[in-house]
Image (cartoon, rainbow, N blue to C red; front, top):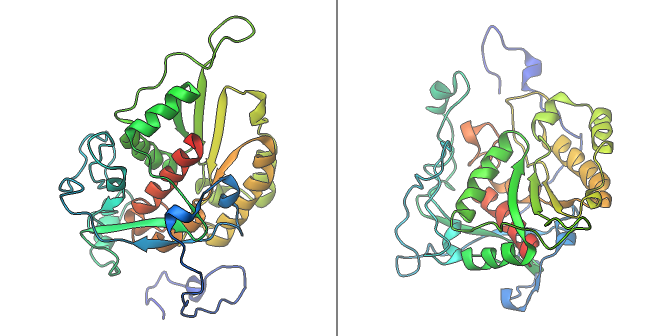
Length: 320
């Protein structure tokens, strides 16, 4: 299919990829069903590429006997996307996964987005009462409420949890704000340091500036930048996590392709994990939502359920 336009060239219709052929077939129920309570807790090894193996599981939308009526969270400063209100003290932790996908990813920032968005295609996934969770086949991630997170903060003497990076980190920061709104960081650290001062424990969740580096950096430059990272174990008072690149379907920026995202993410794992950094796999959980819940439908800035899954996995690994 070609788009007739004086500025259009036939090469614009070509997609740059790995050259591999992929056969799409209907997937049968090949995995044995195991009840969640019979599974082990997921660990950081389950985040690895080639090991991570899960799917999105739909559940009945919780009624008002379980969760209060869903409404927009107006206490997220500067966040323009729709996010259902959640309070981990007054609501069960499972209420965190509710969403209204008809309101997600409807805002615009780039020039021309508003006009184009009037003609965008949407799938039947965009439901008013959407409820699903990312679940691996062989392990379980725990949903933690305020009490469990507060106990974790106290036990590990955490004084701050910080999201680092660029645009994706801003999205993560807002979801972290919602989970931590009723949680108090500790004032002092784990105990006296050699000089007698109190030690502070900080936790960092870093996106490593992906996807921006995908369109700016070559493979060689990305590796060179990763090699500059200090060993995380050099400072025992800081716990480092990083989120992989997403499953991109972008046509907005050059070089932002799913193959490069996977390659760059594997490079990050190979280089940073031996240095003591802990990886959160965001690639797998974003595959099903790469278009439907991406801001401006740009195939990059994915919000909604996948971000909740990433934050759920982060607190699971941090606290259990």
